[in-house]
Amino acid sequence: MLGAAVLGALGAVGRVTLFAGSALSHCLRPPLYLPALAQQLFQIGWLSLPVVGLTALFTGAALALQIYAGGARFSAEEVVPSIVAIGMVRELGPVLGGLMVAARVASSIAAEIATMKVTEQIDALVTLSTNPLKYLVVPRLVAATLTVPVLVAVGDAVGIFGGYAVGITRLGFNPAAYLQNTVDFLELWDVLSGLVKGAVFGFLVALMGCYHGMTAGRGAEGVGAATKSAVVSASVLILAANYLLTEAFFAA
Image (cartoon, rainbow, N blue to C red; front, side):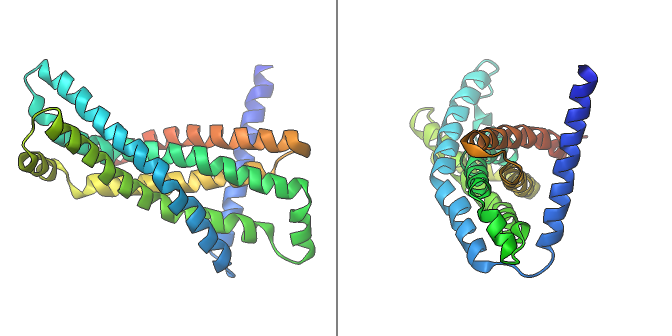
């Protein structure tokens, strides 16, 4: 029983790896379907902006309250601006942004591609001598990899603003001092590391959505299973990749 589960998990990892390698190889070869890419940039990037922005705003505000309450136990309330900024750009901005995009985009991609498979639209593309990976997968991978770092950057700024708003209205911080403290302790690599994480998370989200959509079973049940599996696997991979990237970027 255990051996069958392990073999099944290893087989799944192998299939995903082969799918990712094939998709990446197609990303590096022409043609690139620009209209499809533009549509995915809009769908994945622009339409995800509200949910990422709201999530970051409330997260930054709550983070400021929590850090202030914790710091007050050690008379260290002044660390609120720096910890909010570092926490948002290094961890919370990329991770929460990636998870929100996974919830919205991975499910959408998986459902759309799985429905196309069920209704034999993918077979029609093959009949028309159009590679499904090139036409369906590559634009989504490229769009997610490019747009999620932008969403992360916006989320970082909005989250820091949320902490700033709470700091000056509820916690009694001086506005100029709060901003100066934020700038003094925030380094360029803190921001860049979060953007790199965003690009990796975007690739993983699109990859899981496309993989589960392309391998979906027949019928409505197959579409539902693909959608669920895409969100779960994308979320787990984001958290695992976040640890590995943090270990690589900031381990002593």
